[in-house]
Length: 114
Image 1 (cartoon, rainbow, N blue to C red):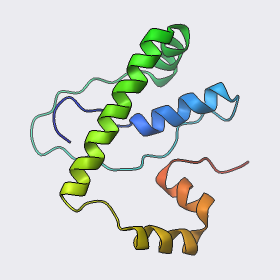
Image 2: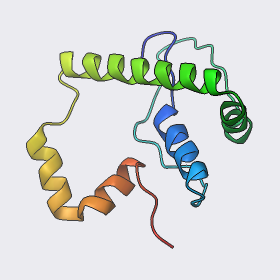
Image 3: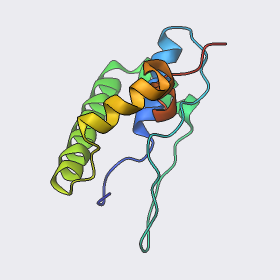
């Protein structure tokens, strides 16, 4: 990840989505691991406080979501350029092995039903 990018934005967006739907609001599992290869300056926000701020301010929410979309697109394009994105065959095999819901849970994009 290059400077000025988010880490954990997908899990946070799932958290916010669950809040809006009155679902379980525990955090989603991370879909990636990040390791620093040098000095890092990072900012951390409290998920509950940030979600409340975004809920209270539509303009801020739109700007934040837009930036997350831009950020995710940039990371995906970078991963594609470096061959880091798994091929469709690999993803399809994982879905067949685990099932769609379990596969999404493993990616942190779905929460197990209670």
